[in-house]
Amino acid sequence: MSERYIPGFGTHVATEAVSGALPQGRNSPQRPAFGLYAEQLSGTAFTAPRHENRRSWLYRLRPTADHRPFTRYEGAKLFAPGIIEEPVAPNRLRWDPPADLPTDADFIEGLVTMLANGDPADLVGVAVHLYSASRSMDRRIFVNADGELLIIPQSGTLEVFTELGRLTVAPGWIAVIPRGVRFRVDVSEPSSGYVAENHGALFRLPELGPIGSNGLANPRDFETPVAAFEDVDAPHEVVQKYMGSLWTTTLDHSPLDVVAWHGTLAPYRYELARFNTIGSISFDHPDPSIFTVLTSPSDTPGRANADFVIFPPRWMVGEDTFRPPWFHRNVMSEAMGLIHGEYDAKADGFRPGGLSLHNIMSGHGPDVASWKSASEAELKPVKIDGTMAFMVESCWPYVPTRFALDRAQPDYDQAWADFPKASLPK
Ligand SMILES: O=C(O)Cc1cc(O)ccc1O
Ligand SMILES: [Fe+2]
Image 1 (tube, helix red, strand yellow):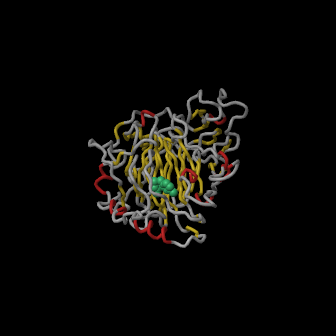
Image 2 (tube, protein in one colour):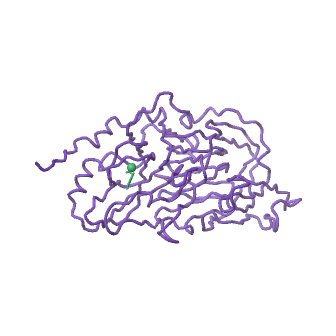
Image 3 (cartoon, helix red, strand yellow):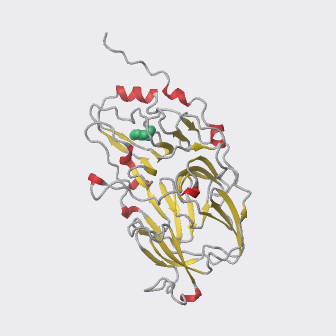
């Protein structure tokens, strides 16, 4: 079947891969068509307010309930390894793309956790993982009970076959797989990138306030796949992340057997180039919240559990303005990655596939070289081009994993060494 997508963010989709599979007029008929099983998948509490409520009804060959007990999964040792015991130092950290990410790995084995905050069982927090996959998942399925997965490819295109349909996700695109949705990732070349795992409230579009009714990520540009399934009666291993640990069970069939579904909870993809970037056309550099693609709110208004923010190509026109990111200390914690190109606050050392962490209250901003060139630049209109950085900003400070701590650049503080001292009038 050729791929097709339905446009819109969080819209109510009704889709069937086999004509007549989707019940009409009710969710749970006494006997669904063809002996399919009706199953509800909830992304929000049953009683969540109507405008936030997200759930879908799935019509499948066998119910998800039909499985044997899960046992501990012994693979993917660098994925969700648990938190370090020692206190977290107030240091800024940065990583080159690690040279020793798993090789000859599928998407599950290739996941490596770098940063995490919050306990998944508290339903808050976010984790940042890298992945490096050179093999397709062969009769293996992954499912995350701990939150939704925001997948950010950096190199190589992923074919993600989920219970609710298939998504092609190339670098420059993102995909979000809801909590609990089972999926397989196929690759045709060594592929790597980032995953932000959101344990908290579902990602949604940010409010637009005075921007008005259009702009930033427009709802129409989000794409949800139509129903697609496989009917395979052969053993399939299901690896599940559940309350921070990995578990496994084996089914005698593929669980990607949803023939039809309808509802508002579904995987989706989005091309970052569609982002309608809005910025200053007078002076001063706005807060980066203007670049928010998706936000997962916390219980405190305006203080995100996780904001997914991008730094796309854009014109810089500010008059009498220091144009790159300013020096700052933030009560929010900032994890950043780079998909391609260069980031305007870092002349050196922040590489595609790398990562940086500026945790709560760490002083950061432009490195010396970026500061010098931006302070001396002629302020004509300049296009920042050929770049895509992103940030996963969270109100909860991140804790690096042991793997991450052992691989941090030893000299990141040098980015801000040797600033000349200001000289006051005598
Ligand atoms: O620290 C960073 O590079 C991210 C960032 C970018 C920006 O334009 C303003 C503030 C900010 O934290
Ligand atoms: Fe910052």
